[in-house]
Image 1 (cartoon, rainbow, N blue to C red):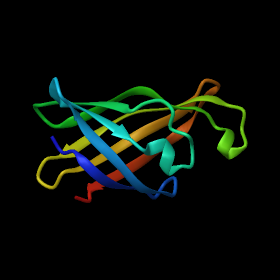
Image 2 (image 1 turned 180 degrees about the vertical axis):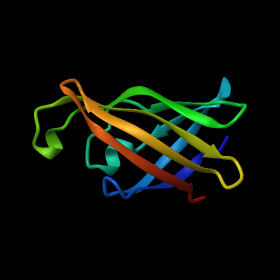
Image 3 (image 1 turned 90 degrees about the horizontal axis):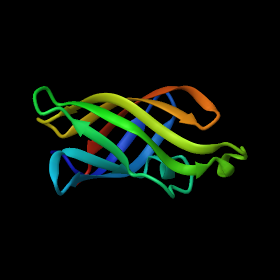
Image 4 (image 1 turned 90 degrees about the vertical axis):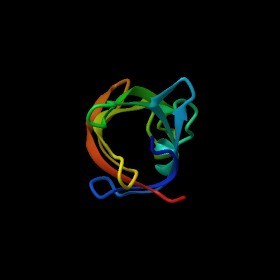
Length: 120
C-alpha cells in the first residue's frame, strides 16, 4: 500500500499541508492517516484516521474517527472533531483522492474532497 509522507490539498476547504500515512503491521490493506486535524491548527490528540483499502478495486473507506478533542483553536466550544469518508487509492502513482464528512459531537457541516500525493 502507499504510505509515507504526503502533501494534502483540498480546494473546497483551503486545506494545504503535510500528513503521514502508515500501514497496519497486521493487515496491509489498512492504513492510518495522521496530521489532518493538525493541518487545520488543532491539537490532534486522538486518531489516527483508519482507512480500509478494498483489495479488489482499491476503493477506500475511512471509518469515523475523532481526531481532536475540541475546536478551541478556532474559538468554538465544540467537541469530538471527526472525519469519515470514502475514496480511492491510485496504486500507479500512490495518490489518494478522498471525500470526507467532517463533524463534531454537535453535528456535521459538510464535506471536503482531499487529494494527497506522496512526497518521499
